[in-house]
Length: 227
Image (tube, rainbow, N blue to C red; front, side, top):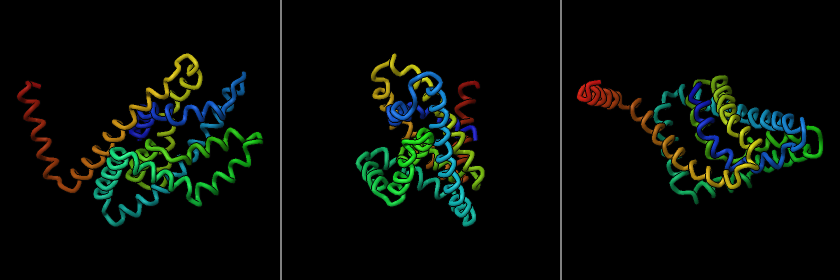
């Protein structure tokens, strides 16, 4: 579970770049409203992440039932690599999602609350539903985490991991102009690394002999270095 929080914490630079301006638009700017709106907005976002986790948890349970989890890890890793190596593919996928019945229906329902006291919470829910490369990575981890409940809290912890940097951005962003643009350059290396880790995890599970060989090589290197 700690991995989910770490993914959120180190990946939150991407959140600042992609969702930071949106967060600044929808949260209050005066007095206590700044803190209340920040809390409600991110409560909605984290709740939707939990919903995503529950869905992927159910899917993951089905995958484990058929004992193909390790192959799914390889497939997810390869998909993430393709998505980040070929941005046009990601753009087309996200465009298709934006035009989908699910997203359009959700947007129509939530935007009705933008003129009410629930506007901050509704905006957070809608933010959680936006396509996001970092959420793809977390959802892949939730899929392999162990059932509906585990996947739900996996995504909640992921969302909590993003909060420290987003809070810092919310309250100091005006002191660092252009910060979000510079941080956005970090998301592709993070995504590629995550894809490689997922593929490696699947390969090691499918071929335990490879796992033993790698361990033996590491021990030899450590011995040669006197460790």
